[in-house]
Length: 484
Image: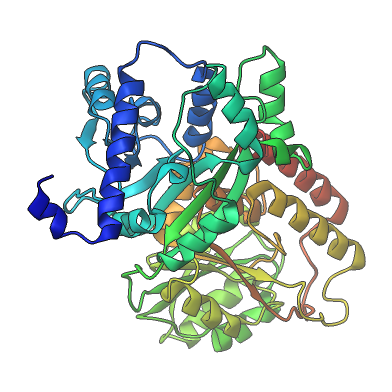
């Protein structure tokens, strides 16, 4: 840099340029060395974690991509890696010619009009000169559904890592920031992002047969052992980027032996957005539910209604039948027994339209319930499954089995396409949607509702039979979500 150029920069910029120059020379030296670190097991474990977050064929940007191994492991449809070490990128381009690698500093990167589904910032924030600048810099490359995935070393491992680097067991590094999760959450908030989920990974960064796998797969997910983990993970999303205004709505109602509630449903379901369609899915009732719905549709020609016969068994199957023919931008599930007031759907709509959430779940356990609205043992079971599910997905869920659930149709299609990961095991449909939303890292928002007792018919839930089935589903999900 010539003297006149230096005079045009303020002291802060000069220090930044000097710092970045030192970092670049340091990493060029590391990447040009023939010496290999023993961190291949750690890097492989990181790749495994990222593969369980980011689906294949996504559009992925990685800042600080180094040799491109992580980006390649994710099998992106479009993969772009950015690093300021040209020597590292030469190796990456030679090894992975199907990916694009850009020589640039993360603080100054310019990618034009590209947008990405996922942006990875792996083991980088503790090295950055100004984390907020980088977060602001990548915002133009996000869309409303973009997820930014961070991992960064825990301060607990500061001394062990220094010792490992001194002994040559880990890659050398310059002095680091050592940001905490609280620091990162604060930086995300002031930069226009929202933290969705955070957790710890990897207790054993070196490969000790049997022991490392057990520690990293199980102990690292259980308190207090998780406090020993080497790296923090955070998944965040940009806020204020939703472009869908005045979206349309489809309300899906699974109705089995509910003829006494049908006329009231027609009266009380609100009109929302640019248009509301109501889809009844009748589930082989023993009463005249199907005939009553058909008659009410004739009486209310102003209502945009559809009536289907369920193709299988269980509420989950009925809801999927309704979703398959729904045309609304937003999909809503409403129980036919009117234990949840139909008018509360407006609150859910407002949350979705304003981008405050991407998946709305009703909560019956906040306000006092009407007498006999929920039996005591059912209440205890709901509280247990809520605790178990919150632990599984890393987002608080107070009521997993409330029938009121709301999501974008595009997100439901992604959940349906990804259903093979969990399998078709949920007759209720609640866990299927919640597990799917958690795997997509959707922002889940809960809306408290006042739960009423049903006035007609009896519940279709069997306390013991279905309770045992729910326990099996939780155990199954633990293997597919938590202990992977």
